[in-house]
Image (cartoon, rainbow, N blue to C red):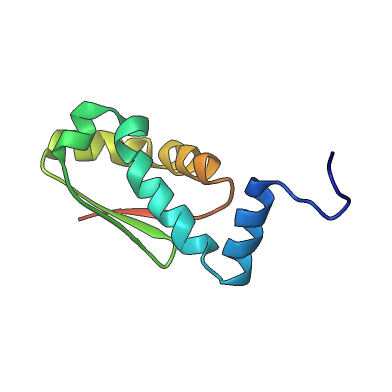
Length: 96
């Protein structure tokens, strides 16, 4: 039987992330780890560097053709990544 002050593990972890101000870094790390799954293996294999700083996603891609294609669908990628995180973690994508 549940007691009145019991909370779920998900709520407890979420509260801990908020209290210790780790939410943003947790969401950023989550986005970086899901990059190959969202973009596919062809793009993930050609991505040499990816990091987030100040709500900007920096990406270095070997292929100029793929880089050009990603520039065209930049807003859609940002939207998918933010949906995965559940909040606005990325505002802009910058290709290096």
